[in-house]
Image (cartoon, rainbow, N blue to C red; front, side, top):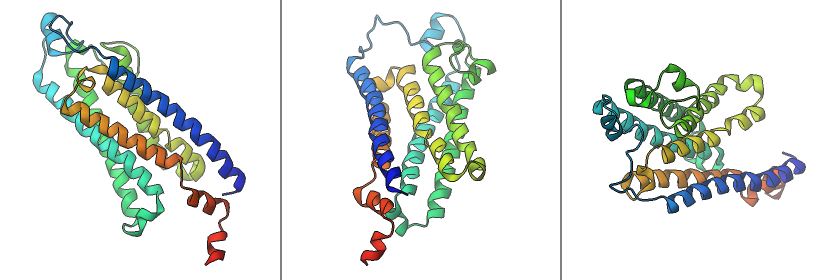
Length: 247
């Protein structure tokens, strides 16, 4: 990598970090100013209490499947993001082969997409959500909680596009493909917005909220590690022959 490319990357990195910093700052502010649930508060749209008030059938078994699939998908998604950054850290590959990391990364990503899809499909069987195939595939087109649900659909579809781009890596070229692959961070942010906004549970003090916050913080930390390479790595990329000459 030339010195010009390194300087350009060092200019872009703070802008990307600032963008994600503002996003997570806004989300943190939403947590601080979220109003606690009270007895007089209206039921959460799409919840069993909402269905009961509207005399609409609600399947608690389907609800439990949706919740479990969402939790598993989120854990797998965080693991996928973290392992993707580990793939870029050369020192980690001294103990584990790169092919092993890559295979694990792909397996986790595919598993996260499967469980995320199962989570979405369960809402076809909950009449209170007013979800059909059209609402499930096109974001922000209708149904209950149109905006939060739209974030989840958009993030999932972007993640699927990023995963499918692996088959176009040779045709696109590695560096162009890598730039598109980094949209996985955007997909994670959209899905996190969906999780945070669609239900009050992540905005209150409980184990689920702590787990979601820890997962988001871990991904943010790995993202910052990814876009802010160490000075030694920057120097090695700018002057690739220097390390060899000094030995």
